[in-house]
Image 1 (spheres, rainbow, N blue to C red):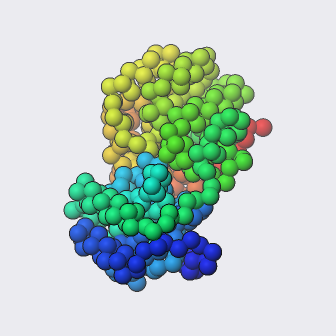
Image 2 (tube, one colour):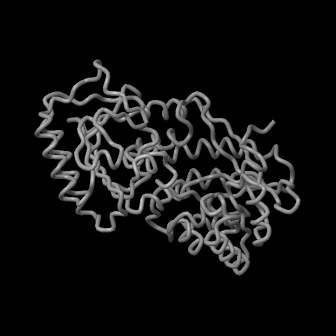
Image 3 (cartoon, rainbow, N blue to C red):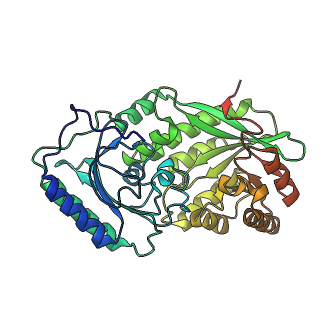
Length: 393
């Protein structure tokens, strides 16, 4: 966190501080939350212009500049998070974000403040340390209304981020600027490589692949970017050793695209599988199952990622009946010292055995984790202990 005050060159928000504070107080009291703030966006941060409530307790102050990339806000705008997040310390999309721990966020509601042409140029946010079990759609509508009131009272437009993330996405798509890294999946008994996962990297883009995929989703180009990454991964697959399948990450939305499924079917002769990722809710499981059935009949395997991370991934397991189930890193990290995690992994081993699926533990970084996984019956693992993602030489 950068707690320095706004620079003198930062555009000012032409709102009465007293009026804005009254709006923020109204927001947090109506929602029953501890802190409310209004922020504006710069290229890489959101600057908190005004804030009210239990600021010291939640380590918030006016003028601070939390990272935009690491924020709840950018994920709400890109569709990766809903505008209401309850149980943030357990939610798979927020529990590992630094800001969750830094501010002690247990619940969050956010609504964009938009310029006259509809662009999000700031956020109205409410946060609390409790899990926010009382929050619902009415909370979102209240905050959206107040965000519109703030936007209407601006005497001049709010600053717009100078960067053009959608333009970056279009440039990557036009130039095909993606590199495929692969990470090994190993047999936990022998540590021999049994498969690989393909991971997209964009060497000319700052902020990492997660930021670019978020920008693509926000611009309506998410499926196109996934298809580009899948095409690059499939180009690498023939160079892998025989009998070492390559997992290609694709969202349910991409798997409903005829061009993506056609691409996969055109490469059915390769030893590849689909790893179903989950960034947004699945609206039509029947359609997804039909698409996957076509791929599986062509010999393309199916992996469900991040099992145990939340309801969505477990629902994938139950509905899609995958060939491979990947245990989420949250279950693997420190499980040698956590009886509850070991119990959950044991249950997943039993489920996989009963359904004929293979189990892969993700995020293995310590020898004790690998040893415990072996003792619990997990046969395969993936993580920095065995190899980091790297280009195929």
